[in-house]
Amino acid sequence: MANVAVIGAQWGDEGKGKVVDWLSNRAEVVVRFQGGHNAGHTLVVGDRVYKLSLLPSGVVQGKRSVIGSGVVVDPWALLDEIARVGAQGVAVTPDLLTLADNASLILPLHRDLDGAREAQAGAGRIGTTGRGIGPAYEDKVGRRAVRVADLADPQALEARITRLLAHHGALRRGLDLPEVDGEALKRDLLELAPKVLPFARPAWRVLQADVRAGRRILFEGAQGTLLDVDHGTYPYVTSSNTVAGQAAAGAGVGPEAVGFVLGIVKAYTTRVGEGPFPTELFDENGRRLGERGREFGTVTGRQRRCGWFDAVLVRQALAISGAHGVALTKLDVLDGFERLMVCTGYRLGPDLLDHLPAGMSAQAAVEPVYEVLEGWGESTAGGRSWRDLPAAAVKYVRRLEELIEAPVVILSTSPERDDVILVRDPFQG
Ligand code: GDP
Ligand code: IMO
Ligand code: MG
Image (cartoon, rainbow, N blue to C red):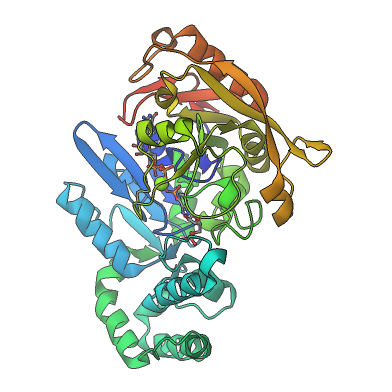
């Protein structure tokens, strides 16, 4: 019996929410370990659609969940989301949700800074979600963040805020932002504290008990490997590590507790925001992928950029996380394409590369080398067994497995919870 870590293997929005929701059924606790409410995970259950940003997707199945210390938490967004899913009939009580007491908070001043920097950067902007993620992680690493536990200690809170504002005051003056009222910030946080603190406890202890009791844990990654602050298309990345190695650190468990690493892979490629994207399409095929795949961001509503499957990026992403297998999603979106292209390498000047180089200009300059695969006219949508798939679709999946050097253990054929083909149960290792 293994625990399972779900990791995005592209630029996010691979369908992690759907896969986590489906796997939750087999798990006892679901853990978020990085990112924040920049994530947008969509779950479709019959005629109900749930959009989760901060809460682990297991809450919809009534599973116990943990927000680990690797997550940056906007406490207002957390309470809003609890209320929002509550209105959809999903009860999130302190019995069910643990919020790590050592997690860092996202405050309104982080959102201000995110917005002001993006506005100032003009064409050089990252295209962030505007949630204050980057500035909050900067303050965490800079050792001046306000953390969940500070909400229970007004004196410590005051000291944290004073220190934080000394730093932000200088930044804000440079960006023409108004000064922050420290007293008002403290008052607002203390007012919110009684609503947040019932969820706060040492997440590592909760998880230690789960590990000792042999309860199955599902780690839910946000974003994707190409958005990882080390391994992604830097600087066009998010500000956290999104790879499987982060699951242990961001939850507070040992690396052996992570178990089976499941990469989530979309059958084509998308990206929201700025930055290099070698297989991006600007033609009718790209428009068609966007339309058929409904590629609009869950968090910001922005149109996602679309392109052909890039096996180079996925192979690299799976290697970095040590993935044992993948869940391939949105195969149905490819129904009706006559031919499908798959990127198998890059050309950079005279060189042929089998990986994405680290340099910013090299990343922008690589040209995809394509292999052409036969498409299929039949529908795969809603398929729940290999027999439901046309031969060309099976061939496409088999070729991707060879190129990415990992087996497809789960195949998803629609947004709906149960439209899944299970090849091998990741919890069985
Ligand atoms: P996440 O951020 O990785 O959880 O992915 P998002 O939820 O942001 O985006 C994935 C979108 O694709 C959501 O709207 C899902 O409902 C949808 N989706 C997931 N799996 C499939 C699939 O196999 N086929 C289709 N057509 N849609 C899917
Ligand atoms: P899920 O979990 C797709 C992108 C933003 C931007 C960059 C930095 O739903 O897959 P940030 O606000 O994090 O500083 O923005 O990262 N981004 C995502 N793209 N899916 C996500 O999450 C994302 N979270 C952040 O668009 O390019
Ligand atoms: Mg998403």
